[in-house]
Image 1 (cartoon, rainbow, N blue to C red):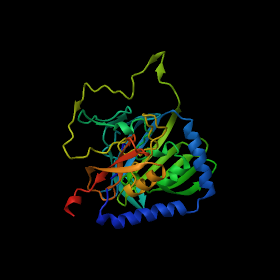
Image 2: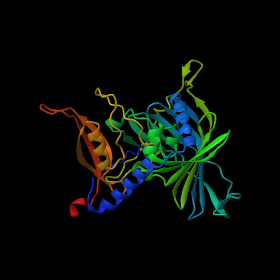
Image 3: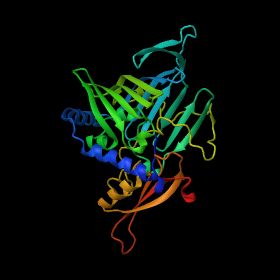
Image 4: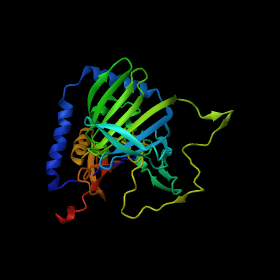
Length: 359
């Protein structure tokens, strides 16, 4: 998820721009913990060896305002570079025993347990499908061509695979909370608009030997957080049984489901894959690698594009109400140079401010 976000700029954004720049500059200049740097290198190296990852998960979402605990469990599978699936199954909860005590700010608070929604999130690399089993409907969202082939993951799952250290520092302020022979805990505070829209910070618990996350806790706000526990990992295993391949998990049968229409002008409900921040976008027109500016504010993207030898060009795209996401990049296209032009044009599409023309 894909949180394929990004967007243009005007006067009211001035203070926000300064704030973002200060955060990013502070992250760039902050001294790095050598223990953390060594962990990031090992985590990234271990992840590069994984081409297919399967396992089970348990998801717990806490609403601290209404003191409700939503729970689901299920399986997940990811195949490099851009195919993924996450199944959320219902949990049977005894109505006579549906209370859960949780320690919050030193006080034991009682929450009401309930099963979350029964759904599936699937990406075949070209489109994202969300299947809602409760009402037997589904929605499908095309993945833009320039984003196909990207290594993508959703809100909790960018942490399933370790990012290269330089990319990790570009996206997060990282702090090593704990390191032992068995486990590693890292605090990740997002910097980019793509990640900021999903959570304020995350705690990632790694197995110290395999560098696979056994738990991720996302703090969306003061009143909401979501915990994912992972286990029963299967790494690089082929899916076959008795020489007969099983059903393709990324091509689900939808004949018993009805396609739901997305109301015009409304964003679809966030799916796991919609929230997935991009790592690298592979270019198919001869470029070795397309610049990864998705989610960047246009001023930062402009500066980097010039340094890389491109002529930056910006196009106003969809409007969005969230001021943190206005004027950030969500689409990239490399335009070959015309006659008498030395540089290739890097055309970037930005989320626009719906009130820009009124100002």
